[in-house]
Image (cartoon, rainbow, N blue to C red; front, side):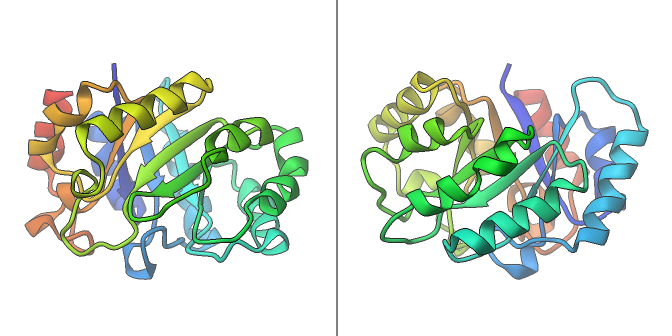
Length: 227
């Protein structure tokens, strides 16, 4: 069954997500961009709280932030974030001429068991070999999201055919496959058919569909029921 990922900003929001059957508690600061990072102290607190609930098969993820594709910078942030014991670390693949230096720089973290997820953006164009390169580097998954949170959704950029092709490539490389990008309840039927590993929400489960407002319990319940 496709899992439900909800992005939270605090222990209070993590509690709401847990009480409503969320599978992955994602830690993110919507005030700081598409993949805005919470502070290490905030991440530590939320991860400690979630782990203390001792719920089987529940995982946490966190982003390193909207960082440029600079190998030393990204590897340093990943190493720091890995100390929090978060289950998965998400890295945004922003525009770059060459992604290989960043992939190479992450070998040390991957070798000691850090689980990395590459976040690609629907508005961007990437090298044809990138997903295979991500697999070869040792990442465990790829997530497709949107960078600009301006009301457009993933579906505005990826047609049904393109979604299926992307899913086939990711799954064919043995990677977990996540979808996000300003998605709402009404989009589920269109994206469930390509069997993503998980679907991520923030704005679509907040009051007024605004990602900076509070989580809305009824919206989470409706999505959980549909999944």
